[in-house]
Amino acid sequence: MKIGRVIGTVVCTLKLDHYRGEKQLLVKLLNPDGSEAGDYVVAFDRCQAGPGDVVLIIDEGNGARQVLETGPKGVVRAVCVGFVDSVNLGRAEPATFGA
Amino acid sequence: MKLGRVIGTVVSTKKLEAFAGEKFLIVQPLSENLEPDGEPLVANDTQQAGPGQLVTYIGGREATIPLGEPFNPSDAAITGIVDEVATE
Image (cartoon, one colour):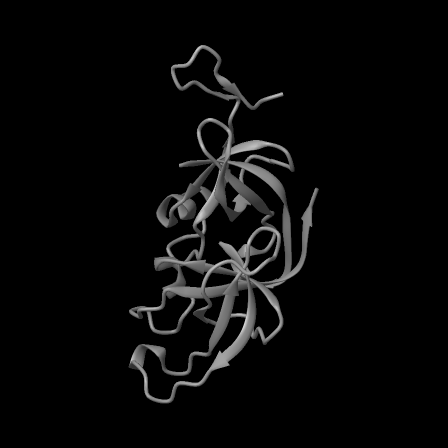
């Protein structure tokens, strides 16, 4: 899994049929210390996340098909599956992301 | 998935049987700010996209799923045509 910050949403009218009704989040990926990793991903939402939230992202097909319940023909990879409250790297102060 | 802009089409007459009837487009990968980011790639079209359109595309094994022939070596497929990218 990866950690990322939601920075927006991507709206598509024309899309694969099984994407209908799914919210697509634009997520900027972060390093464990909270700095930007320099990449992003468009992920489906499974935790009602919104802009500003720091989230857990899976970017792997089989897990995504299970979570989104698409069946074996699901053309899905990235899904937002949780919120990150904090990350402790063994330093005095954990990196805190939650409200 | 990633964001990309369709910048061209590919015509390939002689190709693998698994690609028979499939349309290929040239896609310029974009950053989250919709600026060109990296080298253009060739992607299968599933959405009747055309040059100039902003799209989402998927890489990896998932790109093979929308094609008619189940065993095909596609490594990128367009999954949607983007109406709006709403950022804060």
